[in-house]
Structure formats: C-alpha cells, structure tokens
Image (cartoon, rainbow over all chains, first blue to last red; front, side, top):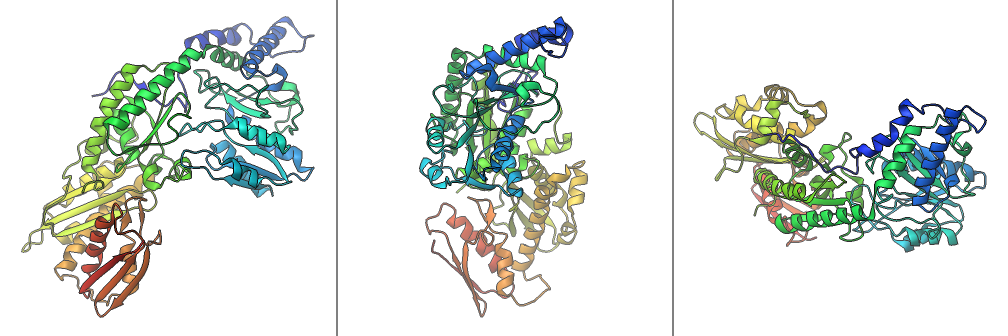
Length: 389
Length: 211
C-alpha cells in the first residue's frame, strides 16, 4: 500500500539538500572551522573569513548588489523581522511611525506588524484582488507623511502570485519611503536586479533552494537606516551580532550557484502541466492565484466539496507530500489568511491544496499525482454531502 | 511511516462504513462546525415498534477524524434503540477508534451531534418529544444556527443571512438573504424546513429568498 519513495511536492516549506551543497559545506565543519577573524588573526580564521566573503559575493551578485549590502541571518523570518523592526525603530525618531503591508504577507511580516502595532506603530493592511495583487492606487492612497516603510512580498507563499514590485518600488522612491520585499519564494527563481529596481531591503533564504535550513540573508541598500537589534559582537558590518554560520553561508552560496535558468524553465513546464491537467480532468476545481504571474514552482488548486486535510492524508498514504490551506490542517484551526484574503470563502480554503515543485520532481511523478488525485477526489466526493444535486 | 492518526482511525478514514443517504429516511440531520467548516449528515431508519435503528448512513465534508468518527458512530448505533443510541458519547466513539488527537475533538464531536439530531428529528416527527415548551423565535433561530451555507461553511444566523423570522399561530415565515437562483438555495430550503417543521407546535413553514 505504501510507496517506498515519497514524492515530495512541498518545496515551498523546505527542500531536499543538494549533495553538491553538502560537499561544499563539509570542509567548513572539519577543516576550516575557525571563527572568521580579522586579517591579523591566525591563518585558519583568515581562510574562514575569505570563504565567508566569497559566499557573500556570490549571493549578493545574484541581486546585482555589492557584498557589503548583504547580511547573513538565520533565515527569512529573521531577515524580515530585522528589516521591518529595524527600519521602524530607526525612523521613529523622525516621527515616521506608519507601516504599510499587504494582508496576504507571510507570518514574519504580519506578526512583526502586529507586534509593532502594540508599541504604537500605525499599520495599514492592504487588500488584494482575486489573484492576490495589491492595487497600486490603493497603495498610493494609503501613504501619509508619516509612512516610513512599505513591505510587499515579491511572491506569495501559498498561491505564488508575483507582485509588481517594479512599480511599487518606484512609487516608494518617488514618495521617499523605504521599500522591503520578502523574496523567500522568488530568489534565483525570478530575477531581481537592485540596480534597476529601487528596492531597499530584500529577505532571502536557502531552505527553498535545496540549500541548508537555518541560513538566510537580508539585502540592505547602502544608506538605509536600520537599528541593530541583535546585540553582541560587531559581525556582519555591525548589523547583526553573533558567530557567523560559515558552513551555512557556503551552502547558501552553492545552492544559489546551482539554480539555473534552464531549471526554472523546467519547473514552469511541470507546473503548467500539473495545473492544466488537474483543471481539465477533475471537475469542480479552481486555480488559486494568477494563471501566468505566479512563481515557477507553485500550483494551488481548490477541490470543491471536500476538505483539504482528508486530501493530504490520502495523498500521504499514497506517498505524496503536499500542503493545504484548510483550517483542519493548521495547528491553530484557522483557514488560510491568503485564500480568505483573495476573497475566497471558507469553503475555498477548506479544499485548497498547494503543490510546490523542486529540482527533484519530474513529469512521471506529476502524471502519477494526477492519476492518484482523480481517485482520491472522487472517493472523497462520494462521502461528501455537498455538490450532489 | 508516521501518521497523526492510529491504524484504526486510518482504516475507517480509508474505508468508511455506511456512507450515503437513506431513501425515505425516518430521521435526518446535518451538523456543521462554524469553527472549521466541517459538515456531517446523518440519516436513520427506525423500526417503529422496537424503536431500534435498523439502518443508518452518514456523509462527511470534513477531515479525517470527522470521517472516521462518522463511520464508527454508524457502527455503534446500528441495532441500538433510540434511547441507547442517544447515550453514545464522543468519548465512546473516540475510545472505540483507539483515541483521537485532542485538537480534533470538535470535528469528531459533529458526528455524535449528527446522530443525536437525527434521533431528535425522528422523535419530533413522530410526536415522541415529551417536552412541549411552546416554540419561540429564539427556538427557531437556534435551529437555524445549525443550517450551513455550503458556500462559506458557516451557519445562516452567524453570517446574518436570515433577514426576518415571523411566528404566528404555528405558522413560520422566514426571509433569507440569498437569491432564489443561488446554487444551494434548494438544499438550504430543504434543510430549514427539515429543522423547523418538525417542532411539535409548528404547522407551516414558508420561506422567501430575497437576496
């Protein structure tokens, strides 16, 4: 009954590490394990420092940024906390105490905003349309003289919708407001060039790129006011204290190097195959998010009249790992704020399934998924009191 | 492989017993949870003389524990008298399944409520309810809280879809804030009728859909 090999389709949550990444990291556990020292330190420390610097250059150059503009963190949660709380703290002295975010941001942004609200910061949560897009006119209308920062994700964690951050960052530049974007789900999958797009802060992470967990980073444009909130040593250009995670940084850089344009094309073709076949072959299904302006790896579909946790459990028993926006699946028993945010009702969240692809998926797996889904969906609809006339 | 549920729960989830509807059922109920959107329908066929449950069927729009509890409850209730079946508790259903995760209590309790409501529905239809408290607007509203709008998974009262309830000499008029051609208008209508008409002193239920 159980397949020996799991078909993993939850790559937005975490990814399988690429062996080449592990090989790149290995020497920094066993040979060059010293702390990164100054140029006057001992040789192993200098070696470590140089390796860290090289990793920083590799990652920053993917954004067309300078290495001094990139700070390593423990992951995108820390990066977004650092960006939002750091900027709001820094600009509070100038009475800039207004923050704008979209209501479908990922939790690090939403809960940072909620936390800041308790401390007297005003927060605007922008509505999104049925695809998840922020309305640029509404965005402009919500800007006040007190607005310090706008934080709009590059792409959504659940439905994959890619925001027009080119236009949003231009608005911010004109109004002299800082702009942060969470690029956890787009970094290396979609291009961002900071020499062309006036974005001030970008959160990225390795865990979505077949890199290690526990390492991420924040791009900080030169001159961006940011209060340091992790106190201790003077690491990371005195932006973030703490012993550098050198193996993690090396692994992150290697993971970035390994993502190619060809791989991204391949993901898009798998994604489109998955979406078009499910929509055509299974009745009463709705695609969540935009048909084209979505990340290469994301497909999110609602199967009406049935519940998501039942679908994921059946899929699990058939050897597939996916995720759902159903309340029953979450620890809090709350339905996905993203599906509700795009105007979906409880029912749409209830039966929504997120499939996210990665390097190790292939067409055969996707075809197997579609066949398995057809069976599961029809079985569960048999049991359901809804959708039968 | 590790699953959040034990083997018995998974077995009932994979192969639920007594799924479906009963044609000319004697008692019917649909219970829903506004908290998570799960719904369960229970229908029973009752031997008029012995008052035993001859047949029972369920349907579920819910998660694994909802489906598994629905299945086990039908097995527990079949062949029991109405009085016995009424006493089946969530604890009993959960024990019979070898235990359910605590956080899933409210999705699985629905099936138990479904069974009790189906029995209640039978008793009301057969004038077996001894409690003859006169029906009030509040009684009706309480019942309508159990009618779900399938599109939102939330109840009609909670989502303010009931515009007006009138009650006069055993006649009830209910105004629903949904269009007449709404996808689920008919099933909602049927459910309202089912829930309200069975009250001992209600003679007629009429509805208008004016959304």
